[in-house]
Image (cartoon, rainbow, N blue to C red; front, side, top):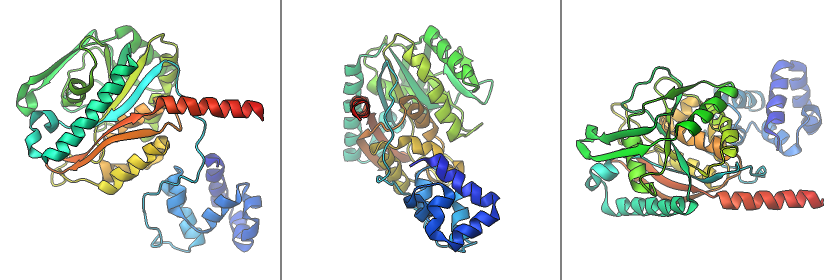
Length: 378
């Protein structure tokens, strides 16, 4: 399956009414006329928006097939469901050299500040997931850890993604009346600035921040997961209130891959944030378990990068904006890496669908080696 060819086929019909008419008149010739596999020609002819969306096609394209082949200007036949199509083969994994750990977890402040507001058994299961991820991170023995979180109480000079280039970072959860939940981190200015250079060389914008004040987005996960207090940490901060772009989040992660491979360091990457989570008045405390389940299924099946192809508005509607933090991590990790879900708990009192996920880099590298060896024998 080549997503770009399927996209090009739909665009070709949009630009050439004669081609569209020919496909409608002779559907059996659609694969030949459109230059795509019969399976995907049939998907287009069925007006199956949900399956086309599952491979990352934008809604502006998928609605065309519904209108053309279902004669449905109102799009009433589309279920709008979240579909993870595991029949589509995964590409070959391509995990960067020197990346020794990748994972993600929620940074819910109440987990440390006031865990009593949520059910005891759910809190226990979630903390058990953190403990398991902490063991994975410690076993990886990284030299430095990149941690992505969104800005909550900080203000930066631009609206770009931010890399903390300072010698250290400090802060607490005083906002939640818990100044005792504080954290002092060691930075890694040299590597951080090499990441800044790599991102800019990739044609993207980034703010190099000499100061990143820590809040719960970094305090909570790192108090639970940091293997040792002197392990250098580079904050990667998103600013979704100023800009929200799934495409740029993926590209930002991808742009750092080369610097990681050439660093000579054992690098870990931890994404933090929801899944579904809203801060806006009247919506706080809502949990969209359908959306969360869809995201976790994508991660488990090795299709996490497809999250970055979703339209911004549906993402904001279903999960708000912390998913950008995960997208950067997925861009670093690359395609076809499967996630192990250690915990998922929908907790309305603390306001979201909270999760802990380990990205199985060892499995991906083993599969990549097997696929390369198989290709070499054929």
